[in-house]
Image 1 (spheres, rainbow, N blue to C red):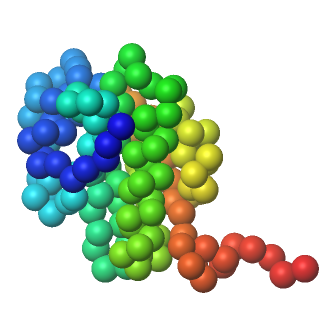
Image 2: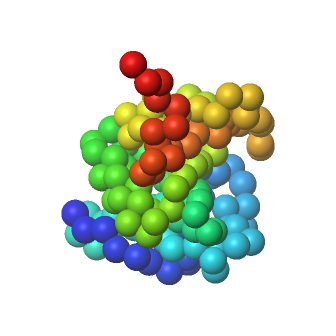
Length: 146
């Protein structure tokens, strides 16, 4: 397995197949894809998992995280997500967040992301919640003193 930065075009087909196969390909393209850094996890020469990272100031958002359906649950997505979280933290962001499909919240919690209360929404007939993780001293802000 190898993780590398890839061009936006390399992730579009995987996004389409995994996330929105019932829609046209253009539905998975983001207006700001040129502003993101796109990561792909490869098994040999096959793209297995992909995610796009967008950093603005001290905040980052990862979007369009997709792992081939037949390879979900095998650690590919976990490895890629951890890589992206590490990359974001190393750039000095204080907060990273995503719009998570509600039924995937438990997966993101394993990586230290927490649901932002009151952020549930529906898009394209699918339920989402915003989940976030804070780095550094910002990550300590919700801890209570003994």
